[in-house]
Image (cartoon, rainbow, N blue to C red; front, side):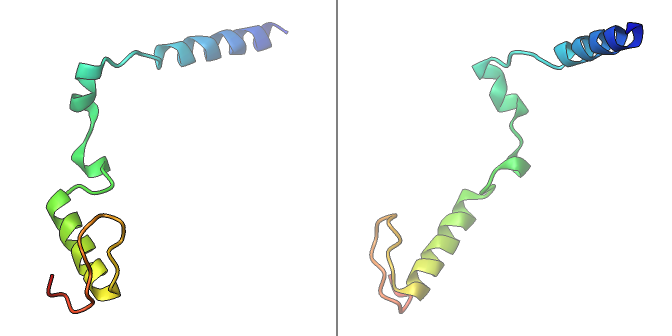
Length: 71
């Protein structure tokens, strides 16, 4: 029983040290560009445009799609 209490106490101490509050102004420092789904917005837009042109669909992001890649 003594070891269970000690293990439980150790678990509480370890888990409480990992919790911290991140202020909104600090989130920009913690965010890494490598973690973004689209790290390069310009390349992402170009790939979307190419995909929509090849599929002859507008994709819901605006702009027309003709299938020829000329828009």
